[in-house]
Amino acid sequence: MRLLTLALLAGLALPFASSARAACDGANCSLPEDDKVRALARGVGRIDILLREGAGYCSGFIVAPTIVATSWQCVPGKMQLDGYPTALISGILLDYTAKDGDGAETRYLYFDPRMGSEGFGVSFLQLIDPKTAFEEDRVLTLSEQDPAPGQPLAALVHEKGGAMTYVSDACAVTAIDGTGSDLVVHKCGLGDGAVGAPLLDPDSGEVLAIHLSTGKDGVGRARSAAALLRLLPPSEDK
Image (cartoon, rainbow, N blue to C red; front, side, top):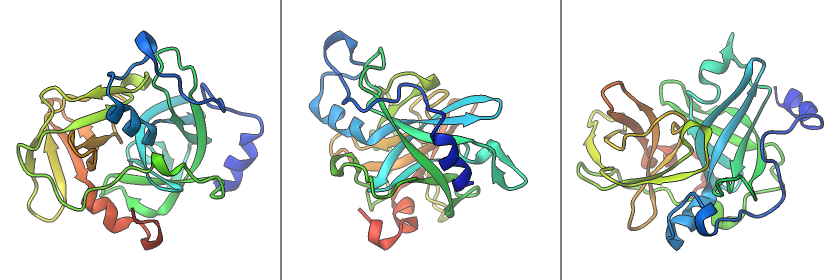
């Protein structure tokens, strides 16, 4: 699969591929005028998947110099056939914070089956070329502590594949699954394209959980960042 992806890169590109830095100023910026939020946004991106039948979008974030975390539902998830991903190319679109897409760039990724699982709900994607590691300021800090009920949350998401938005109003933890599954229940009202997004502590900026799904009842489910830390290779721990 990785060889196939490498071969396709020569002739295919995902939307908004560019080497330019993000332009996020004035009315063209999709984020609030908050330096901390905009700094955290450098570590979050839209996961773009090119499939045989079209394109798909999710959210994801950088957890180590060469590793991105996203939802299993996104890659490989429903995109599996006989246990193999059907995605032709996947990548993370960074700096998609200007409403016209100006300044965004794609880094190409491959699914690493050694990490994460369908039951856990999280996938880890690796940079195709590990020599081109993500910039240090893009790697988000994962909290070692599980959040408590009532903990305020914020999310940086690419809902419906659009430019990144910051969600914080009425966003909070409602419950923690105490059975050892590290499941975080929240009421952030996140829509399509938000799966794989980081749920943040609005004060510290640490990632508290990764958003996995929103039910018909509007209740969101996520996996704790502490659980993600246990899966990352020791040399990549942040």
